[in-house]
Amino acid sequence: MNLRELLFGTIGGLALFLYGMRLLSGGLKTAAGDRLKGLLARVTKWRIVALLVGAGVTSLIQSSSATTVMVVGLINAGLLTLKQAISVILGANIGTTVTGWLVAAVAGLGAFKISTYALPFVAAGFVMQVIGRHPRVKTTGTIILGFGLLLLGLHLMKEACDVLSDERNSPIAGVLQAIGDRPIVALLAGALFTMIIQSSSASIAILIVLATNGGFGTDWQHALRIAIPFVLGDNIGTTITAQLAALQTGLAGKRAAMAHTLFNFTGVILILPFVYVGLYPQLVELICPVGLTAGTISVHIAIAHSVFNIVAAFAILPLVGLLERLVLVVMPARHKDLEAMPVTLERHLLETPSLALAQAKREIVRMARAAKEALDNAVEGLCDDQWPALSKVAKLEDAVDNFQTEITRYLVELSQQQLEPQMANQLPVLLHMVNDIERVGDHAMNIMEIAERKIQQRQTFTELAAQEIARMRQEISHMFDNVLLAVEINHVASAKKALVHEEAINEMQETFRRTHAERLMQGTCDIMTGLTFINFINNMEKIGDHLTNIAQGVIGGLQWSA
Image 1 (tube, rainbow, N blue to C red):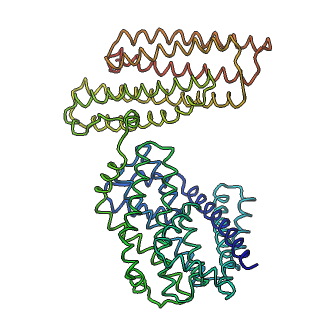
Image 2 (cartoon, helix red, strand yellow):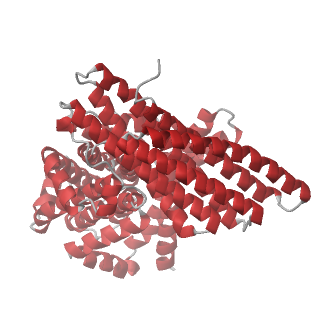
Image 3 (cartoon, rainbow, N blue to C red):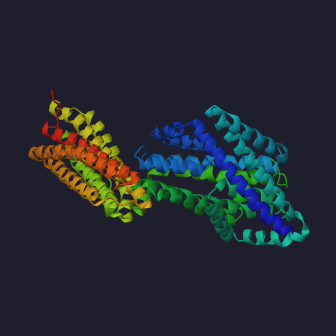
């Protein structure tokens, strides 16, 4: 019976704790709005500032995983460099220790009775969510509800683990102690558990609850030595969240996640020998102003967690450049990655504007080719119901976005050099070209979403509609080819041919709308399939407009017309 209470109480309490953490973190992020991401994106070149910002943001939202995922997204969007991202992640590791101190205060020191205050928090938060009319009130309710559920989950886990103090359950405590007596096994167990629940805060919470309830025995010095390897494993396991988030990003995001993993692994490897010989537990006891007891073991574990992350962060901070180079070695750019990112935008050539401008034009062509490939795959997926083709579109569109960020940054830096008037006048035109190509990528994504709905709803075009789509597809393809040639070799004749195709596309749009209306009137086409058809030709016409802007830029000699 006691074993069942332990199992179910711990699992149920953990679920409430995790859900409360999610509500609390989500509510705090909503309350802060985009300011958190803006703050991270504005991190300066000073490493210590980046570290403090990472620690501050994580302390606020109570989730190092959320901060790291945000950093992965920002570096993938080109808003952070890898070196800045590493510094922020170091700070996030420090910020995450705040949760451990909260749990230690509540579960260990008995700052207040959990059962007395948890339910009022839940009730107050729920009422604010339900009856609140203003978004701020609802968000505040979410935060309070999340905090209440977090406390309630902690209370349930604590109650469940109380059975460990019963002598009849000494075998359970014996198993935990047997694992803890083998530091490597304990480290791996802590890492695996944190990987499964994807929350280092919850992992530390359970560790503290187990320790305070005698799960590692009542020899408190020995219990601390058992708990520390679990803490180290927690720091390894928490890296899995960033790795999972990076699966959907480009190379830059994957490198940020790898930096997080390498840093945590390195820190654990460096500190592990001191754990084996007993020096690290002694350091923790030296730092703590009170002796080890049942009431203070939670504080000692929180200190062990904080000391590891603070010492490791400040030890690695001067070596961020070295860690960055190590990440680049571990994760070199593959051929496919090189195709999806600018490779010739050399900063040292900015002082030679003619060469720098030539590089920028070369990358604009590569960006346009990526956009065309995204469009081709989206249209193929629509016409032939091909999921594999559609699966490529999002990655290609991400590549287009990366190109836009890097080329824009490069052109802005180039504009700050001493340029001849004719060259300076080309920069605004090139920037507009970059934006037009990016919009083509967006329309390719729109067509991909249209195609996904078509396949999911099993829509089928009529034979005439399919022929019309094929005609527009071919016309856009020819227009795109001419635009690519025009930009690549400054071929004005190809740019003018593109304008002829654009006129044909506009005529097609008007004609196809009329024929579509006739099919609806005749009942040969259903409404949902008709909407898919109209959305498709509208997106294709918009793509023609953006390609026209690029062609006109070439015809005008990359100069604004007077």
